[in-house]
Image (tube, rainbow, N blue to C red; front, top):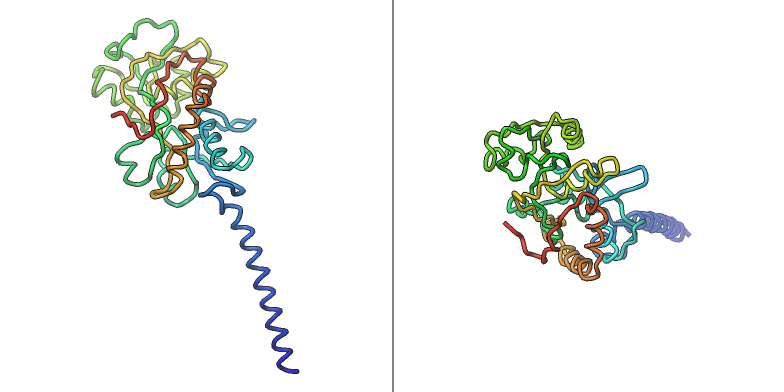
Length: 280
């Protein structure tokens, strides 16, 4: 009789343990498909503040990187409503991948040797270039050397404007503003002559409804910026994402995304790059 009581008690404990385990696995299942597809959720890092690239709006998320990431996620087995978007600021991207905060990052993320030591990259999926954005009626800046004695703006902490001054226009007057939007306002009202960063980012800003027709890209192609999709070092997602990117190009979805997000600014994009072809 005593033995049966102990056994019954043990069975009760065992039942509780099984129930707790089941509850725990239910929570974990929420993310269990993140690396292999077909799960309930995938977490993707994007920019929240770059119009045309990655932007959080009252109506959701928009931009070229958002369209690319959504397409890739679909190929991995996730619908749009199974994507959890996380803001990936430039300084945080490697850490977010290393910690596993996100499954992959598509955030105007240029592939560089330094970054490749910390994370892996699928792609590239876009070849951008450093360029300038100027007023549409300004015909005084036709080459990088014309930026000499001009007021050239970029965001605080960016190397873009300094690159121009060091290599192309040593007499350019550098102006640092806290945001690209602030630089853009300066260009619009004449306080600044030109804004410099990646041409894709510039095109995204210029494509906003309130700015259509007011700005133009210089088309100078001062650097090569190979945008890749970042994944954790050694992740099997790299090969799967590369396959998805190839499909996006071949079925025409890539060009549609370019036209949709950058077209209003007259952005003359490079052809879709081949996987692994990184331009120096």
